[in-house]
Amino acid sequence: QVQLVESGGGSVQPGGSLRLSCAASGVSVGTETILWHRQTPGDDRESAREWVAVITGTGSTTYADSVRGRFIISRDIAKNVVYLQMTTLKVEDTAVYYCDIFKGRRIWGQGTQVTVSS
Image (cartoon, rainbow, N blue to C red; front, side):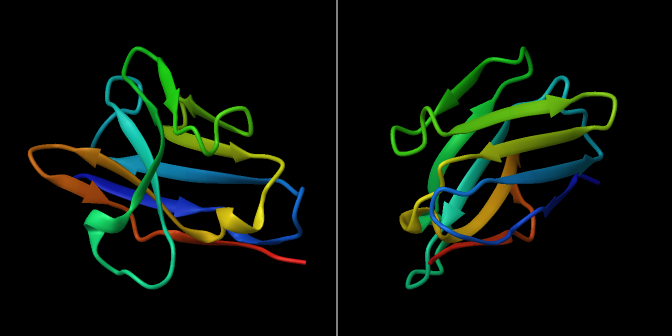
């Protein structure tokens, strides 16, 4: 059974940093494509989640324009964890962050809240 568990969210001031973790079980992050999405208040639909970053099984990474240069996605294969290092955070980065994987269907973690405010 595939399970993803996010952690590391919190409240920071603009310009601050956070590192999110996505612990996987039932799959290996060393061979799978893992994504980060985020969802802002006001629209609870899964389809409203904004794609943020992706790391493939080969380690290739891609970022949304809104976070490129500020966020870094990486993985620790031994720990089976995918990270999202977020720097120079902006108020508009406030959202619930989800990691996800497609295994016949989209599987989401429970999400972790990131709040950026002064």
